[in-house]
Amino acid sequence: MMARRMKRFLSLSGIFAGPLLALTTSCSGSGEESLSGKNVVIIVIDTLRADHLSLYGYGRETSAGLSAFAEDSIVVESSLANAPWTKPSMASMFTSLYPSQHGVVEEETSNRLADSLLTFPEVFAEQGYQVIGFSENPHISKGRGFAQGFERLSLKPGFQADSEWVLSGAKKWLRTREEGSPFLLYLHFLDPHGPYEPKNSSDFLGNLQSEHKLVKAGLVGKLVKDGRLTEELSQTDRDYLIALYDAEVREITQDVSQVFAMLQQHGLSDDTIVLLTSDHGEELFDHGSLKHGYWLFDEALHVPMIWRIPGLGARHVGTAREQLVRHIDVAPTLFELLGFEAQTHFQGRSVVPLLRGESMPPVPHLAESSWRGINRQAVRDGGWKLIVDELSGRAQLFDLDSDPSETIDLAAEQPDQVARLRELLFHLTRMPSGVRVEGARGEVDVEAEDALRAIGYLGEE
Ligand SMILES: [Zn+2]
Image (cartoon, rainbow, N blue to C red; front, side, top):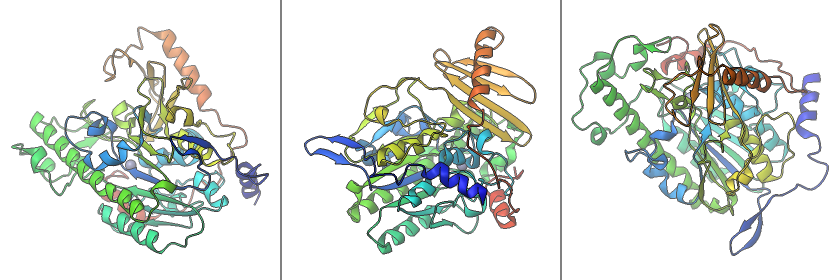
């Protein structure tokens, strides 16, 4: 009871004290437009690394489905997740806290988002929004604590990725919803998460053929143990897997384009803020491995982030390395756009000025992963990135300006930078005052664990 009261205090202080402070935006030719009361659609495409989208400069045409949407939107070039796998990453987006602060860091289904924590969907609900979600990923479910604030968060049954299930759920809901109050619609698509099983990959594969039994069977998870390949793969096998991943990216972005068509069809495009992002990226041999969860290199953290905000126009932002947008910035940004009260315990900041094309002071970025016995943290500040393995104490330091691929470890040569970044890491992960994590331990969910095993979690390699 106390926890609930404290949470309400944190979430509602000041919210009902007066009229909403609606942000006004310059809207070329049509004066000022308020965003207060606009609908919000959040699209999460699981396991989508930004640099494999043609929209982000990739060589293959993988994101034609997003082209029309992006032309009308703000594309954030440097957008980073706060964790390299779903549950901690999305918990950071939902709470604007770092993984070690919200505590949703273990694969086990009993580790859930604590009821005592404030999530942004809860604030939307308090503000009178209908909050509805469709999720294909068992991590993003009521059982894991993510349904807080949702009127309904539906989880796809079964073990196969099926974007059609999300799309038809959203279509039906939009058709039958009660009008009169704004909505927050959360859509979490599972592909291109492994196994890579595109419907059509022939043009990306060309003449590539794999002779490897596990690669051909799509069982790449069985080739990875403790974050490393269990056997060497030929360049052909590697190219083959990357082609399959890319084909899945192309298909899911094509599928997602139906969401924009749906909004258009219902006449909602001008009244809806749309955010498209991913929960994390994917290792595709950049540092010798596959999949995600173990490592904190940028291929696992650099995700697309595209905002369509009525009246804010279209542009590319965050092209300078220090103009980062992090997942923890999502909630504060939405709150400023919609005129909700800012939350002092949020670790992120509103990036509305950046989205408008203005520059903002640089911020550091922190990502964390506790995964099958490892405990890693990565902090970047300016052009430097430090990755610390807490158990071994090993630190790796990269100069991202000269070495964006993170291949040359400068830790031994730059002890002062290592010390500075370790100190920064320590400060960033301190618990904010007023935040209490209670109820992060729930029941084991056997059904969800089976579904998670089917996509490679819980030791099912
Ligand atoms: Zn994921």
